[in-house]
Image (cartoon, rainbow, N blue to C red; front, side, top):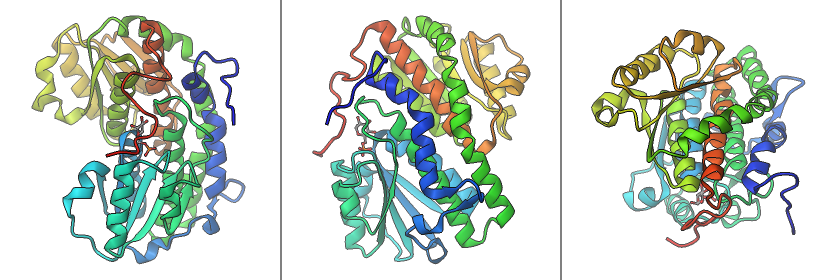
Length: 367
Ligand code: G6P
């Protein structure tokens, strides 16, 4: 069937703007917003009987899984192993029968992810998948499916599938916490309410498009960009770097802010912008001191934060993108938006083929 771009210049832009709606859709599948509870019938796994989660994915889906790892560990106190599928399938990792093997894939057809699934199945593990295409091979070979309701994603660079993967896994982490008794009914309600607000905040962030487009006039001229973040903002930094590489062909790296001093600080000068993802959470002060190390060496910072974070930064930034104050659980969902828009408008400014970047495929069905 045909999907049109509507009033948007590219599918990627259309898909970014669809996010409030498709996230809302995805969350409603797992959560009862009125009651502030998990819909237990949508969770086809008994998390109280497993003692470990092994998550495997590729590309953007891997970064979504890397964010979710923090949620499963913090909310459900569930130990998480995570790897990219092309490594996992040959690692010969010893697996315990009480592990749940979870696979994350937009297409449900990625060859390495499917091979990893079959490896875990042969070891006798229970298999679950977070998939966007529910008729896909990965979905068919899973014991439990957690759908993302993003709808068809046409742009090669994943946007709405990523935030829907985050949404589904945040809901799963709450379900796991409930089943394992690590959160009580009041905490469940708080977390569900926090998630339910994500679409509204994302709508506010979409209104910053003009400001972000202006910043991209500078980004389009550089050769290298470094992204920094801590906690769930660390995988988001890697996703930001991936998005920029994929569609603008600018070399970018995502790093854990605390690792700056172990190498990348040597690269800092005025020619390589450093994009710092720092909501004013409990790790904010640590990230700010890394940012000050960058500024002290002549590095130019683009800071993505909230109002309180912007006031506490105490350096001259090249630009500061001020997002709404949001509950900690949903920062990766909300902060994903400026990351996507920065990559998109840099690519548009440079005139690259945004929806069909060179050398990339939407779905990689060969090894
Ligand atoms: C390709 C796509 C990426 C995607 C990755 C994993 O590299 O270009 O956007 O993240 O495959 O795809 P999957 O369908 O398994 O999520």
